[in-house]
Length: 407
Ligand code: AMP
Ligand code: MG
Image: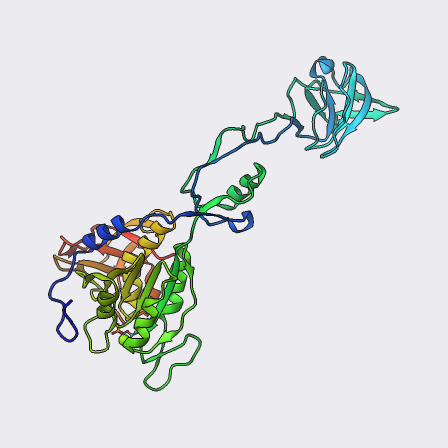
């Protein structure tokens, strides 16, 4: 491997080439059983099939009286039907005896329907006294009864592999008696934040030092993409320290921030090439052109430029999709998209992909003038970004463009 420090990139890879490489290299990690209470947001590794009916028994959907529907035919306010009340069915405490014609059982919502009954009359049209109930309206058989299996039928697949579990999914898994659904293991991610100039987040910038803004930003992106972050500390631009961190084998993905380019203190590319493979170094895009991608054993290593906008952009182009793929999620950009006309033209260059921060004002897309990769506030003012493809010189004023929204 040639040492490119202080020489510059001889050639840059196309974004699509790097994307294709990562697509081939990263697929879902194996599954692991996960306690139900921890399952929300996790991705199912296998289809889940119900082994039981839900509900497992026919139950009342009302407070009232369980009856044989036929017994109430013809009942009205002026000509009520009178039935003998022979018992009580409560949720979890069923009435055990079989109901005979002419009988009723007082029943509450969720309680099992006694054998022999086929309908429930709601309490509002009933009047009970001296062991009898007068019913002032007819009910058809099956009325106000939830049949066994009306929610879920035993043997059916209730959730498919690949589903990111929502709150209600976890509830449903509980209802069929699942205890530890098998979910895709979350990719473990280690941040490797480098820079002699960096102070830890929470400090006040002073002298020649700046505060590390990349690690809190990357931590948020990793959570968004379903990764599990391992602890980290800020490293100096010291090749031996960086080497030692790169050699640790506890992560699935390593995100190196800073020192990814061709400067004198940019050690990570050389170290990555030495310890594993530096598959790409330098990508035809703006910002983030000094991005590197490689592997050490099974670990994916992303060399993200230190400039915060480049760091964000390189993460979202390459690391984000990889994390999602490892976690069993779709690789696509997770951002919501809107299509709107451009208020001013966007200039780009054929041969590279541009990531242009934009604001949306009065239904039009306004490119944000500052394009510097060090100006993080540009991404804070922006509502989203527009991607200018490699084969375009730019986009004219008035053209409909797709904006990927940050929020
Ligand atoms: P580098 O990629 O290390 O050459 O850094 C490029 C620029 O980004 C320099 O101005 C660094 O000071 C700045 N920078 C590097 N790392 C960070 C970080 N974690 N947070 C904020 N700025 C950074
Ligand atoms: Mg640096």
